[in-house]
Image 1 (cartoon, rainbow over the protein chains, first blue to last red):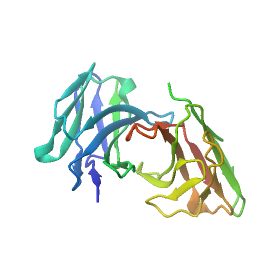
Image 2 (cartoon, each protein chain N blue to C red):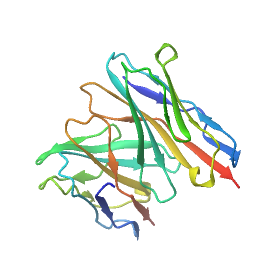
Image 3 (cartoon, rainbow over the protein chains, first blue to last red):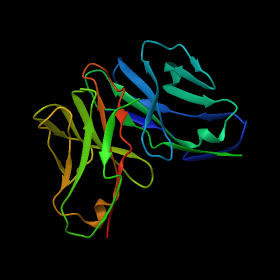
Image 4 (cartoon, chains in turn orange, brown):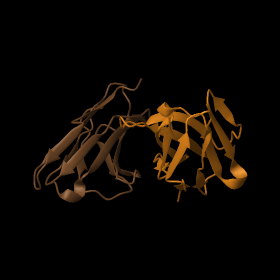
Length: 114
Length: 113
């Protein structure tokens, strides 16, 4: 079985503050992929990043960064110097090799206050 | 930019009506999915397809049905809508070999009175 836990439901920050979204996953498979998606108010989910289980390198993309730690089964996401356009729901997701069914966490609602 | 389209974006109907939510993609993707998103934001997979004439039930039981007669088209049908079907329905697609990188439509928000 595979499971993704995003404990924080709603997070409010003032513009320019950093915000970190926690993601903890469970799987018995050794080969898997982790994802983050963004869902803006318009509704569609936008792919942000994919990381496979053999690549623990952290990644930075502009103001976004991701910290993958297999030892704690976590794949956390940080938005640096948040902006109002970052206001959205963010989903962490997991797919295991051969499963082909993406399991989503419950999502984090991020509200950036100007 | 993803080329996956859902219609209608918003639908308000009465109990007992038959409805079909349309989903089309122009990327030639083999895999397509329907997710139901409840007001608490959580996404539940209700149907998926790996290609033409292939459809499977997802993790969440749903009274809806789907069909996949053409690669680009994956409609979802409710024969008799009920208030419990009120939700947001998201369609997605991906390439067969590409694990997890789903492209999503903007969703269809259904309200059953």
